[in-house]
Image (cartoon, rainbow, N blue to C red; front, side, top):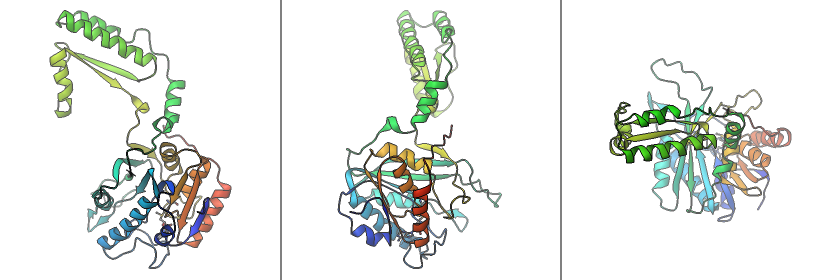
Length: 336
Ligand SMILES: C[S@@+](CC[C@H](N)C(=O)[O-])C[C@H]1O[C@@H](n2cnc3c(N)ncnc32)[C@H](O)[C@@H]1O
């Protein structure tokens, strides 16, 4: 198998030559429906007349990537939505719904990319579209998932920069517990949990916390607060732990790459792809991108000592990605 190469060709044909279970992770962004012309004529996908024809082609390629990805691997597809006749088409979700009908795979996360610099809208009767999904599919429960290495810079930042908590942290809650109408047993439990929570802040496991005590604080309003209200009613108190940036959520912030340094019109952020590669693979693993465009996935893989296989139909973009792979250095911007 050719590794560390960008192969020029139609991905459906090139994928057919790859063996089953031969790559560790697939990460890609296929052409969105009727969004752009990449100059690929009839062979490229994205400019079908019909939405269902596009979906059918896309799913055919998706199943090929599932076939070539190892059982311990994952397949990540990034897709964008489009307004058709004034309404959102929901095509990314139609794709995900079709894909998950097959029990060979399951969707482990839908990570939302929140764009820090989305394209402004002319239409003043709609909000600016500033998000896109990255669907992360796995083939088995044994998928590689290195949570500690994902967005690690936030953990390091939190550890290094956060001021030492005040010695007075949580003291007022001890006074409130003492003066509350809780039973002695409830007071003992509340003091013990408060002590543990304060220690968790000192150990930098959580950012901060708030406590609510029966008879002193008002119950929270609204459906989601139901569980917490029940806790306050039944055990006399509730502690809300605030994890801040350390919590690894299914949302990632990053600007859209500008065309200033890259003549490809639809480049996805190197930063996000690097983070996904750290989450889903190990050094020396093989990362595949069947729609490699300007080579972002391949560059991210190279930066992180992984192998790559890129497939791109347009020779101009193949040339561009080869130049990028030779020239561009590691890009590890932080979006804090
Ligand atoms: C959304 S772009 C990918 C951009 C890429 N993620 C990047 O950061 O540069 C999709 C790419 O798929 C290519 N493409 C379209 N149909 C293809 C096909 N059947 N096989 C291989 N590449 C194809 C297009 O030329 C385009 O460069």
